[in-house]
Image (cartoon, rainbow, N blue to C red; front, side):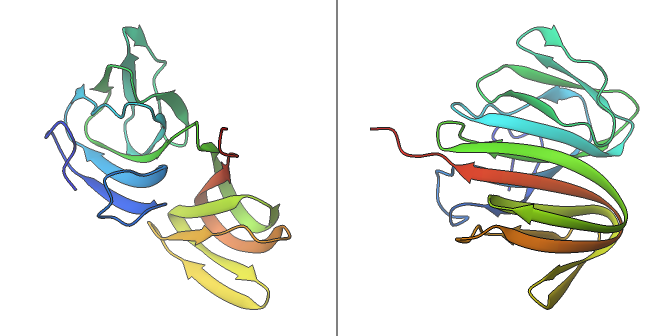
Length: 182
C-alpha cells in the first residue's frame, strides 16, 4: 500500500481489522526506505519502529534527534509527531508496529534465538522471523517460519505455551486489549 505521504510503500503483514477498513487498532508492516525524508503521520497512534536491514537511521521527532538506530533496536514515538528520517548508510528496511494506545498495550522485543525457547503468554502474540528459520510447536502442531514469515497467536482462556526452536532473529510483539473506557 502507498505511504500516506506518497514517498514510498508499505507491505502490511497483519492488522486487527480487514485490510479494506479505514480504521485499525494495530498494524504490523515492513517498509523499504530508499531516501531520507518525512514519515507519514498517524494521529492518535503510537509507533514502534526497528531497522531490520541496512546501515541504520536517525529520526528527528518534533525537532529532537534520536541516537543512531541500527538493526534490532525498537524505537517508540507518537504517530502525532512530525518525523524526519535520516538514512546513515544507504537504504534500509524497517519493521513497524502502529497501535492505538487507548485500545491496546503493546511491546516489541527482538530475540536472537539459537536453540529452543519456551514461551508462556496470556496476551496476543505476533512472531516475526526476520532472519534464519525456526519451528513453532503448540499442542502437538508444528509450523515452520522462514525469513519474513509471521505467525499471529490469539490469546485463549489459559496462557498459550509455545516451544520455538531454530536459529533466527525473531521479533516478538505482545498485544493486550485494554478495557473500554466508560
